[in-house]
Image (cartoon, rainbow, N blue to C red; front, side):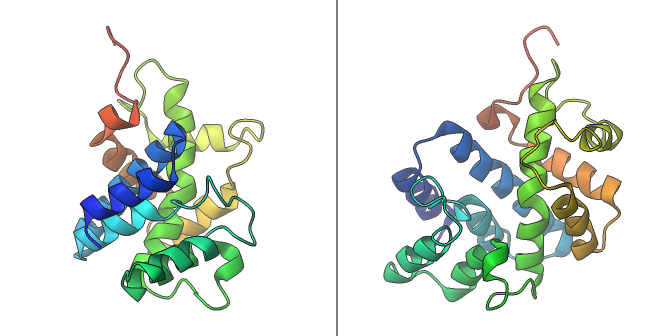
Length: 190
């Protein structure tokens, strides 16, 4: 599966604009980390883009990622991609552990991309100038983006062997490279 095929798949199953943007954010972060770790950028982009492609139709834990894996396998998608998609859901980790750089990176960026998006949306400059310190401060406010697991964000940095502030900075930088399609470019006049 290449990036164009992944984008088509995501759009086939996902109509919610926020979920499409989340796929783009995770794709940007995965591409950034693929370059950082000297990995296959196209592969990592594809995994980031489609990791939640089935979520809109099957959001329940018993179905999410399992139904997607069935579809991917039916379409002949490489098992590396299928396994990575399955590994991002904690309920699949017995069979699909976080045992490769690809799987670790996906787990590390998924929740953080959502949290950074929430942080950016309450700032006039959006992603521009968003510092790790500001993100960490928002992490201490339980009511802010309450559905995002702070533990998952911290564990993600540990998985990658990167200090949390540096991990946040990497993901902000990655998302800045896609700020227009993410709707996170600075407001006019900022």
